[in-house]
Image 1 (cartoon, each protein chain N blue to C red):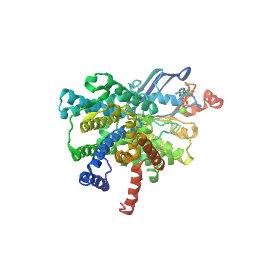
Image 2: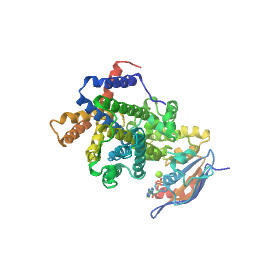
Image 3: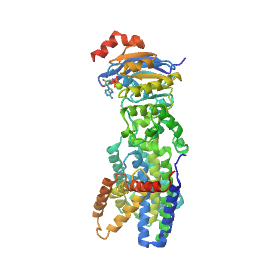
Image 4: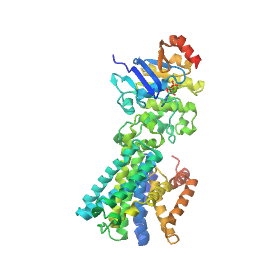
Length: 318
Length: 242
Ligand SMILES: Nc1ncnc2c1ncn2[C@@H]1O[C@H](COP(=O)(O)OP(=O)(O)O)[C@@H](O)[C@H]1O
Ligand SMILES: [Mg+2]
């Protein structure tokens, strides 16, 4: 498949997984809970990266997708007693339908216009869950008492980390194939993609569906971790910015970058909490993101990779 | 015998402007045709209609006997036609090899994922248009205009065409580069490629074509052997007049 895998790729992934698997032995429950949020944020950031980081179709409405996944499984399990093993796949399928709907405007519009339309999708679903069948969605107040899948911080951590690492690894591998190259080409010059004999429509649809798959998976498991849904927090522009900033800090279009960006940002917000309990925190992380962006616009990933390059040059010379 | 390309009564209006005004011509298999005319005559617009980037107002375009007016650009490319752009449009963040890679990809997501890039073929194509080994990992911002034109050629050849439409291939190239591209075109001609070549450099164009079509204001004004077309009175005044 031409993935270009090298020994250090295996070493880095294995080392990362090992360290993360041992985490519950060493850190407090509080820290573990923070890491659970980081895992979910990583999944959402990767979902965003597959679509927006790659193809340049910036989504300001990712909670639209995440919300479809979360609400579908919440409603199915709580209102209709559907077992989670059916409800979650159904939620993912519904999110992919949502991804297809979000794709439709991308047939005609791009750039900032698309970003605005995607934002409208989020607003739309936020209004819809409040007015359409509030007996099902819980209306403005949302839902609680949704079945949870794990007990205790350690189990929640293991489940969320397993999901995250499966998503990260599979998306990382997928984007290393020629498909990843073709999706990046869309961001650079869609006309030239066509002129090279490839259908941008097909590629974009695939990107929206894959992004939706990941968002739906993350949203569904997230709601079964929290046990509740609060529409105001979910369909919130701050949530959108958290996803985007995590991706950009980490390094858009790299999959691994957004994963680390999510951890970086989650812990940053956590450490700032005692000093800045309110929404001012978002100002601080905006500033930090900006500073980093000025230093290395391609994010932490590229800072790390240039260090690794130096290490490799002094290490092996193949 | 079906012609590689057959254009009949092609018309393209841009608002009040008729950029293509009832143009008809055929290309024969393995034949190379020069398409000449002053700036704004409508050469590029013909290419754009053949590729499906612009929809014609009326008239028909057939590729190997298939009427293609309703086909998408990638579908036309699959039928064997491909073009270069007058203003090169590379993928700005990709290396030369990655640019060629996009041209080589099949339009199938499944194959994109499961099949490896054919790096040998990428290198072969890039070298054949005159890149050196050290250029292969360069990005477009490090390339000269001449290099960008070569990249256009390589990406176009990568789609495996039987008909190539070359738009101002020699513009901005040095004498050495023109020579290199000319040799490449000659080699492909000997392998039976069908060409339609737009160029302002008539001297460079002459040895590369079997005959020529001259247009002005969207109309064919002369057609036939290269020598007869460039000595045509209407062609001469159209070049001097603008
Ligand atoms: N997209 C467009 N919209 C409006 N007019 C156009 C467009 N493209 C080309 N034209 C006009 O059509 C005419 C032919 O242009 P073109 O085909 O680019 O000429 P050439 O390639 O022979 O220099 C010109 O008058 C040009 O201004
Ligand atoms: Mg032109």
